[in-house]
Length: 117
Image (cartoon, rainbow, N blue to C red; front, side, top):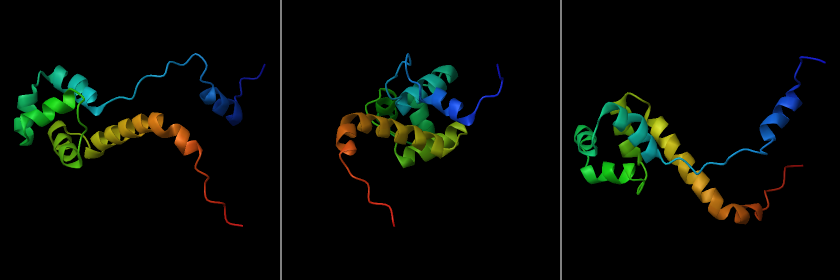
């Protein structure tokens, strides 16, 4: 038996989704709440004050009622010493996964532009 794994075998192993639990899309508000605010003992009011934003905006984000705007991402990035793109990528991925589940069947019906001859 060979210990060498071919690239094709490795790719197939990633494509095998049998037995894989699909989790719902991760809202960036959950990340803000669970990975930043809770461990640091921060309230929505404290974060909002530090970011010079209305408390209600932070409250609505952590309750997963609204998403993170570019403005808020820039502020969160500065405050938590992360990249603003970290926050924007979380938001983009959440929106993409959510929308894909809604319009996936419609997307399948779109025929890609033909390749150039």
